[in-house]
Image (cartoon, rainbow, N blue to C red):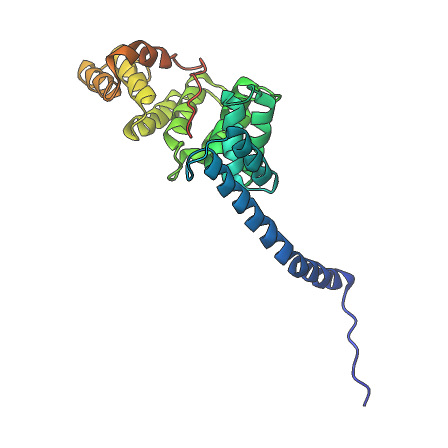
Length: 243
């Protein structure tokens, strides 16, 4: 008896081919990831994090190799190196490039930083408040290390109508979340809001409470820097660099 032959629709055959290709590519992908992790660990070895030999040029070279292989944490670190000019000339275009790559790898800190780049139009990124808002929203919820910063930025955006319709009620909700999460910048802004009656009813007692809380852990010689951080709705606060 001749076996019956089944003719599958071309798209079904395509799925089978795609699955075969993915299966064939899996070992190579795993090898690339393992190689990237080795490069990343070597970068730690030469920057003093896990070894006794300090050679920052070699550390950056290994970090670059890891980042080029798609290693998210390496991409974040490389972004900060170029942003701050650590051991290499400051290069905002390179910083944006690596934060953008890391954000695509779901690195939350990089996503926070992209919000800043689009907010201020840095490193070749267009100044786009709506794009900045989208990145801040992405990291304002959950347990992201930079969640309280993103919450503060959402307050500033809603308070000034940057990339979104002005809405002081929503702005204050985000400000409270950020303040309650321990962000000194937000705590000071909330204290001033109660002091001035902006977006909330004037309340001298709450104003004093939040202003005092915002200074907890701030050294006396840093008071002027702390005061400068609160610039009011619509004025871009300074970057908060989190490593």
